[in-house]
Length: 185
Image 1: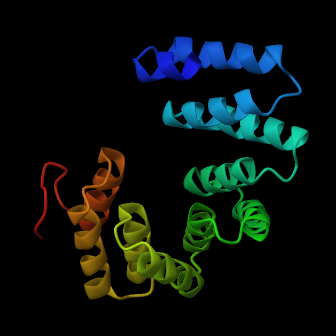
Image 2: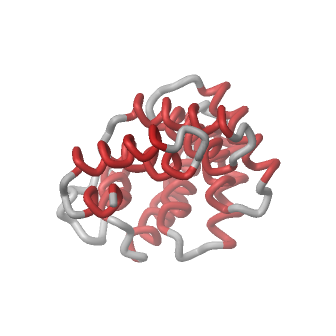
């Protein structure tokens, strides 16, 4: 119900409903794993971090909570050493999960470890060439390591795959393109 309320535009009500569900079932990780992403989407980053930490208290090895907390920490300027530890643990538990690998690479990128990030994102871009987020992150790693031409190619490929609006906006921001632009350079 909380997810439905959120998707229908009643963000506050959806968050309240999921928070109630979490409180009604304090030993259940499910409501927390639904609440965290919605808090992130509502840009309530500190609340989302607390929610993922609560989930990890219930299940210290939960890959989704480890991964989401690591990505959120990297994305919002949190402790990058902790983010790397969380992402590495998630990767150890789910070595074939591309989203977990993406988080590891993203943390490396935020740590300014361009070569390590590049290796992760190159593999993801090769395995999943139609995933615009992986292509975008690969482009960022290429920029970080000084390959502007390669980055341009990756950003163009990511845009060609018609990414979700938030990803498209980030790509356009990275390239300096106006957000209303749909393609060329």
